[in-house]
Image (cartoon, rainbow, N blue to C red; front, side, top):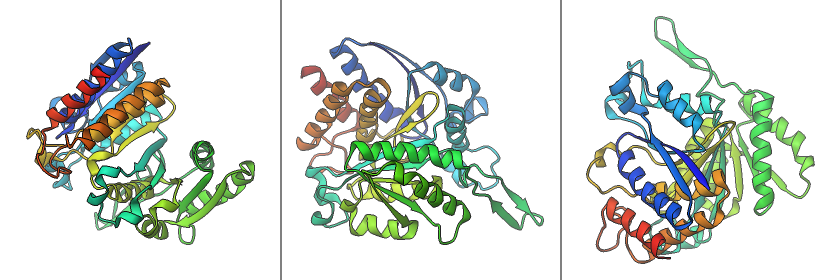
Length: 354
């Protein structure tokens, strides 16, 4: 099979972790006789520094022509600490989501047996936790009108959703629930926000179309508490953009490390696969960042973009084996810590030898 990828390393540790994921991608392509073609492209702070645009048109063209996008991370302290910056790396991420039509972010939250003791929660709370969070990506407050008035002393951000946007993401969530344990939790703030009331209204209209799926409704503040108290009670969770951004970062912590969880952003054009963590600029160039989330994102890429389930399964097996053998980076190491590149080499070598 021909696999055409756009590779966007981004900023900070992005290039290092993407390099390790590409080692696994190449090992899989060779093992299963796939024809691999890939092209690198700029995004984020790196793109701003080089061409003045966090998501250049040349990058967008490369993404549109690809079958899938493997993405690292974006962000740089020089922009984070400058509230008056008119161009920011994150604007590139939002532009990519909008232009590629990436309306759904899929984040599996799964604990690893060998790392349960690393979770901030008690073992009995997290052991066996396995749910999927589905976040709407192209609407809400991140994309609504924003600005300043009153000589800059008043700021506003509008949260806007259309019925079509809500129906689209809920349909995907119901499809996921149907393939799992037939339980869907719709998270909103319908007791306060009009946009959330639209979400709940649409969900209540759609629920009878899926009689075999249990639909429950939960306010976002309650969901934030229950993720910590009873994470095993969730199976598929769906919510709007900003709530999803916050809740999925919270959920990722229960696994023991931000460096373990992958994600897929699905939509109208080319889908994007990326780790959930940020650019971690403090570790950039030190060869200490955990590449596992990016490598698992590559596994999701094979499964979701190419329907190559065996290939994705082998990457997951290799990751499990590396953790069981203790071939891990300093964030989760018990004894000797391995470097980013050593972990990447070990996993790719495991794939090649299977």
